[in-house]
Image: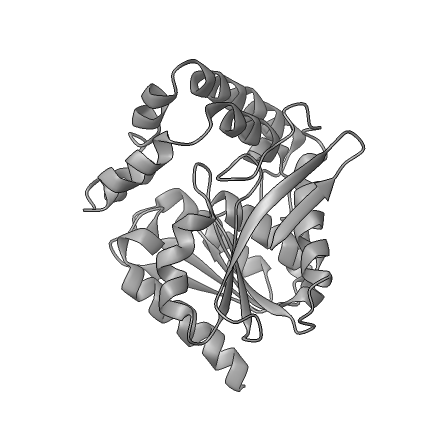
Length: 277
């Protein structure tokens, strides 16, 4: 599947892959910053008897390009609208399932709140509904600009520094960490810097107020040791109808990698229960 976004200035293709028969119920997977649709392949391989998994490379990641001079006030919402438009054009009329991690989780949450008719059920992993005030968003953009410049100056050094964050302490102890770090280094630094400038949390319109209007069953997944996001997700569940919180014991921000078996168990139980209800 090829997804193309058309803005007043450019056309930017988003690469996507469908795993398994498209007649099966669909799950759209959205990856995190530095990742790609390929991050979800091990999960799709476990799910392909029951679901058609759609693995998208978000702008600036994997095989998807990004317009470096995009408008940071518009690009996040344009990306949300683009994904919704592609799903609406699908030959399969039924609503699909949606899973998003971190950056992809922020996009997925906005998708579900903006286009509830497109989704059966949604899983948001280690994500937030954005920053509440314009001052917070402006400050975050300034911080992210500094990070984007580091990416452009010394990408390998940035990758090492990125994974030193407490956010990823549990991932660093996981056997797969070296493989993940090696995969990240082959990304395009210029594209990733642009993605941070255009899809970072400082560019995301806050959806805190919209949570109260949610109409789609949502589960928020968060790692027990990811304390900042545990608190954010507890606040979201308190505000959001039709939502539940699943806390993964012993896990951090990358809970789906740290405990893939539990992640898949929770995902299939949640989605299958809804199908049978």
